[in-house]
Image (cartoon, rainbow, N blue to C red; front, top):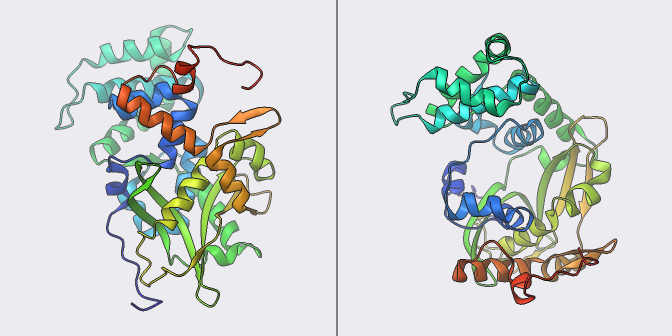
Length: 348
């Protein structure tokens, strides 16, 4: 094959997300919130995403950097400058959630609107009367709610003008930065999807943001883009707190499986430890590159301690997940089961 040959993408992003395989994000969710993992992945309860500006801006930035041509296939631009806020947003999202729960295949809602409004009012936290809450909703939330329903029928996500503008600014900052711009000024070897590779007997999937080949040195450099509130505190607030070390190891294994079609034979290439490139969502701080070492990947697999706290590694998490699947016991970890429910308080 040609070294500069066109990259073959066998599955769309939508098709990738529909694959019934475990991802690094699933493994992190299993570790951080096992109850939510059980509901979504085992019980298959429908998930309706609530508005989270940080997540939306991060997702938009990824799309603008790596797959700008996919915008219309994944998002619907709202006529709203920004979504409603506070309790009106809570009311709007609750109303949308109950509307979806009562929606037929043809898009019609099989419930009285007044009944849905009553449910949304009870869940929103409003202390004012229902009539006053409904008035506020009609003033600032109605259009957003209507567009959420329209997007639902088209299997799209709603994004507001301000969010798109912020993501555009972050994208421009990344591409113009003197230190990281060269990573993002082309979309070769981006959003690479791999499925069916195994880590300790668990079949997994991954989508790598970018791989940079060096044909002279015969190396491959995986890259993952993060958009965070404060990229100066990435290690503490994201790598540890949100357990990005799990993602680092799984992505490393995905590339090393050599199941990704890069358009050339890279069987003799060395896979370098992943680099996280972190953009500041406020566009004040310059993007930073956080480089991992082989030791960091080893710690991610075996587990490690930082400031007296124990962080479970991928090895134990996968072992625990496989045990839970086989035993159908999800409300306690294998370690706690073996310890008869006793935990060492000083470790956690």
